Length: 134
Ligand SMILES: [Zn+2]
Image (tube, rainbow, N blue to C red):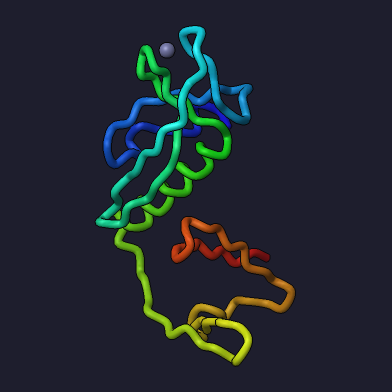
């Protein structure tokens, strides 16, 4: 991930951090010391999304490794969805005796074809983003 991929206007609260272009995992070094792992959270319309970052003990600068950056990006995607007043629908969770499943209404699946698949991104145990791919 490049630094340019993240825009500050996407943030709920102003958060300052830096993404190290070449580092894929922390802890990073800053001021000659190992940064420490900290827990952070963003509140999006009452939904609290936790994420983690690396923080310098001295200058308090925060760094994200690639996994942390991906997670934060997913949170921002959700934030955009929520702020955009997108449509949502309540669906019953069905159970066939073995597995849980849900149905999509016909109006949404008119263009779907056999062989497509769903890419499910996990936000937490109860929150997902489902993208239907061709
Ligand atoms: Zn520092």
